[in-house]
Length: 165
Image (tube, rainbow, N blue to C red; front, top):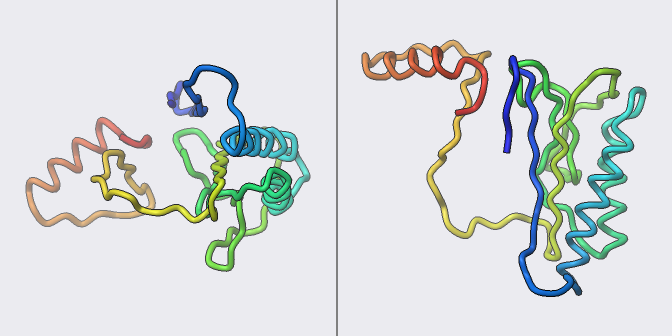
């Protein structure tokens, strides 16, 4: 769930398991791994700390619970009207995915995303769905040819100048 006030974004997500009785076994392990990894990341995102140190710590937490962190999940810095600013860190580092080295600074804001798995940590496409959330890239100058395309884009620029829609 997310909202913004004057372009300052707030996001939140949490997993709830609905069942009678306590959660046990591998379900409990993966939930505890994700929760602990998020808490560790929260404590490491401090001025002067490096983004790769957070990635390494998240990995160690998952290993302690005999779980894997899902590949391709990136935590982004957020700025006013920008949901995915330039600084970021990976939850798990692979040869295919890299982010630039960065140091956290005072008054920066981050959306920390942690996804844990009892499997191999490689997301699988089970059923392809249509995209329902879009975001305009402010860095791109769109040259649209069709009148209908220009009209739609004009509406998007007016109603959703910065945020996903």
